[in-house]
Length: 154
View (cartoon, rainbow, N blue to C red):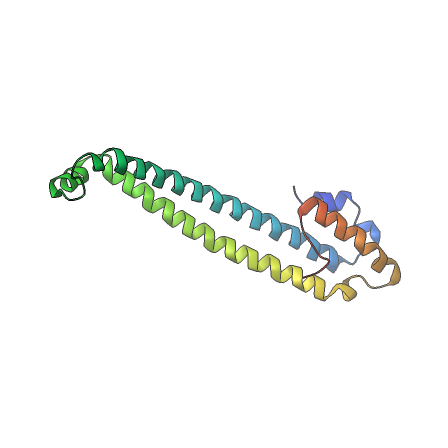
């Protein structure tokens, strides 16, 4: 969902200032960016869990059948297998991607929350006048329902 909903909802015709409209557009963009990074972090986490589950199954069915962990010949043979190094590279890549996505998610969350707090703090300034002040609830409800953005309180 993009910001076109606010435009078709005719915010510009509701006598909101350009500053208010731009701030609301930026808020929706930041919320969408936060959601994107949440989704990617969740995906990388699921991939990592599947990878670790597969490794645990391999450990249980292959290594525990003999003296696998204690046998140095086993470890040397495992590292000599063609599949070992690509799997290790995939594990490292997923860990790096997950770490990067988590950092970006944290930054996106901070950006979103700071702008949301600013809008809440500047509420009286952004909705000046009795008419706009009464209609702000409608805007807040619209943002809550369509974008899961709560501007009623911090």
